[in-house]
Length: 355
Image (cartoon, rainbow, N blue to C red):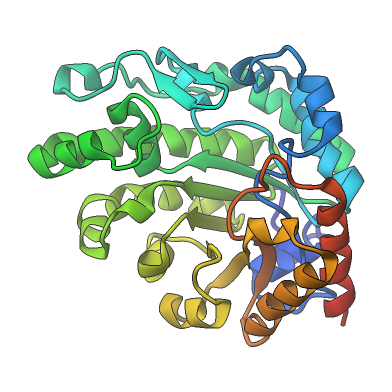
């Protein structure tokens, strides 16, 4: 039983009746809740100041710094949820994988995993491996009070693509070569990563996460048939592993318009939608029983205020008939986004949707 649940006969927790969690549960909300992927950092000058001179992975392992960065957008923008500041490769680093996050490039793996012998390097993750996560969540939940805190992890496919390619890839040729050429090794790799990912999410939930999001950043590179056969079992394993905690589970991928129904089928309570598919059409593809999250194009924020409000109105109109809607961007905040544009966007959504 999670601290975020409110069982019959027990008083609700501080976050239980928040607009964000109500929307995730497809319940009536006082206003459409808003948060932004990659809101913790990226565009904020106060983030750049506290991160100055500190490598990305090191910054993810300093609890007080993590807490400060996570809180910054809540203070500035008035968003309805905080998202834990970390990186999807943190659990891989924690189990001893030799990797680094290179500025302007992304995660780079020293020795890619492409053989069964190399698979042995992926040991189980224990809570002790990420004690700094538990400490940071403790600091945050005390500070946030009634504001929910979202935990997150990278999905097995996206983690596998980094491990197999050795870093970011446009075509995923090594990844697909392994998936098609040695399907048993591929299945074993994703199953191992599913276990690591589930363990990482459990640490976050047990430390106080009100919801968790599984990022499958690169899975849009696959066809629906390949996803169902080669990815869905591992993603489902992650969602099933944390189902007993009762916290909302969000699933998001980029370029996944053709996969939206499958993302929900994997076990998500909330399906994240990028900007390529209108939310009413996304709801048709996902089917009933799921809330949706999204989906303003992050680049719209570089247009004038009138254009931002017009495009936001389109998103809200498309979401009007949804069972539950969490407003978000269709991907992460871009680094050069004007922070004031984000603050105005939160205010606009709240004003337009207040019941």
